[in-house]
Image (tube, rainbow, N blue to C red; front, side, top):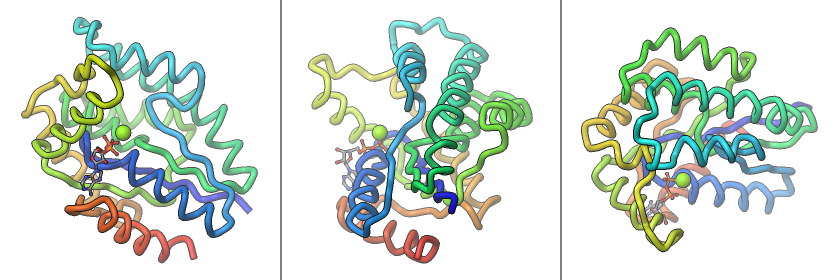
Length: 213
Ligand SMILES: Nc1ncnc2c1ncn2[C@@H]1O[C@H](COP(=O)(O)OP(=O)(O)O)[C@@H](O)[C@H]1O
Ligand SMILES: [Mg+2]
């Protein structure tokens, strides 16, 4: 049987990485065959593209270059990793996917929604998540958390190209995500980022249980 494809979305620092990895532990403890992956990245080629797209050194990157690079990373990811895993019956947990394109490049950058939909369709060959957990948080709190993670991970603690984009950009991204959730309520489930990691995880597990078991 084909595996389930679950994506995690939301603004910077909402807890996608933390929460999706906890979901992985949970599903593994139930005996499921699970892989965790992320975008941009997820493959060797994707990780090279990720480094390029996030590098604050490339401040001159135009919006079209950005979306074409992200789409290239996605095409490689879907074909090389996600589809083979699903076909092998694995559950695939993915930290960001097509909704990030509509929220970041559509709402955040103001790119044409239809063009982005077409690029998503091309890059994914029509593959869509079975369920998407949208972790909602105010951009102010999220960015603060994200910057703390950066500090812990890299000595420099520098904001990446998106983190550095400013408050208006991040407010638009959040609005974009909430708009998507309103329009695709069957697929996209909104979870408020709670005060603690555990409380948020509990709610995510409750929602996923309904879909998975
Ligand atoms: N519900 C929560 N409450 C408090 N802190 C959280 C919560 N979820 C995640 N965090 C913390 O916030 C930071 C950002 O989480 P992370 O998973 O890296 O976010 P994202 O991947 O969405 O950018 C981490 O330090 C993480 O431990
Ligand atoms: Mg993350």
